[in-house]
Length: 193
Image 1 (cartoon, rainbow, N blue to C red):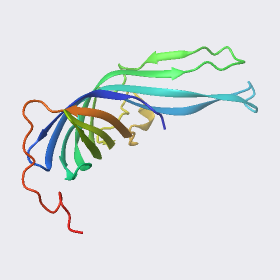
Image 2 (cartoon, one colour):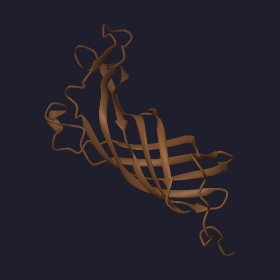
Image 3 (cartoon, rainbow, N blue to C red):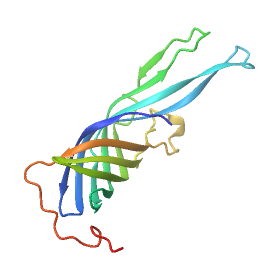
Image 4 (cartoon, rainbow, N blue to C red):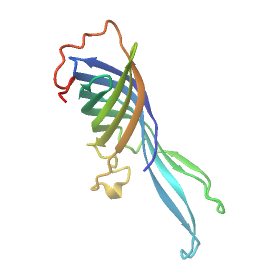
């Protein structure tokens, strides 16, 4: 597991008081961490370990459809697709104290797959304020495309190495132009007690 950063801009269209369509452009980081163990020359004594990482950085375009429910606090389950283009790919090996190994930061962009395609499921929770809404989005992404190929981890081409990520996003959406009327209330807006 590795904690990374996602940031970008989002545009949402409301087709009715419930149905929404979102398009975004994001800078998205994925990665993997793994321990590297250091042994003595005989290979019999563990001297220590450090954590290495692979960092994939993408320009992503999430496209989702959602169904908003609720009153002042709205819950919007959503699903969609996320095509992404690789911006950079780095391997990081920190130095190990007590050895001659120095820090390694190596670009592996040429070997990595340049395109990723993922499915997305999530929920937005939003609260209105005068010019728009504050929202918290929680999304799960799962890549359809593999990250390994004949040049990158070729010994595991038959395995399914894919990006998986859980993202929490906090932000604000501002209303552009004249706000649309809410439309007639129904059981979703005003549930029977």
